[in-house]
Image 1 (cartoon, rainbow, N blue to C red):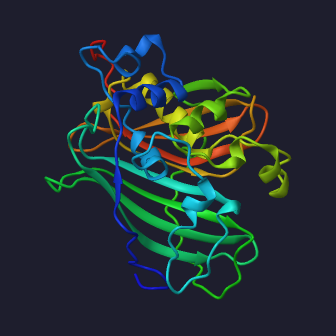
Image 2 (image 1 turned 30 degrees about the vertical axis):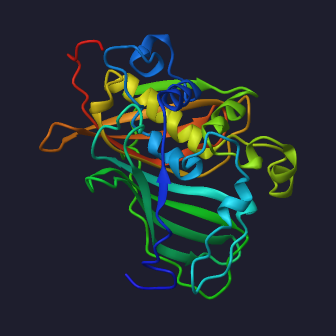
Length: 310
């Protein structure tokens, strides 16, 4: 595919994490004492929760607070407008888990390599920037995870760019039937404040002013919090919380979540398995009594019921 910005490669970014980072991430997305392999560093099967790489483009190598806006403005994509990162929302995210992460990067060198897949002009609503990011061990060249995601820059369209291709959809079964699994996540006024300590310091999730300017009435919870917390409960419900039981995971961000909202996820098993025994499941997460916040949900999970407890 060709078009403005397509193929542009961002500067390679060194990233690092410690066991402490893995513990914080697990706790911030809902892992608890029933999952000590994520929440206790001396557990014999201590592991990083599989979706952790989504935080690394924000965290990079620092454990300190960063200026979110300055970091987002650091690199301009050639041949497209310079978008305002103070008005950006998550669009859609697909993660592929290729190798289990080591519990710490200490003593090794990892980097994120990101390239532009497309930049799309959606007119008055805004513009979409789609990227692919690979987490790579620079000494071996091995790819540990791959993320294909999009950011939606609110109200920043109309510059004459391509509209972009139609996306592939993964809706619930038709005709719609009762979900095979349902689970809930009760958020609080602390949810975003804890999650942002992983490295995603967007002020939109901490102070009222950005959310008021964007029409949300105040702070909202990170889209990636809902993305990760849903992944956690999905893996816990269907894959015995085993990090090896998930191969792919994706969702589209469609409406904001506010502190205190209760998230209800409905999951449908398809009965379709790949050659390695991973079943395709589809899901949708909604605010109780309100709008859907994650749709187009799809995951490949080993859903056998006879796994021994970790």
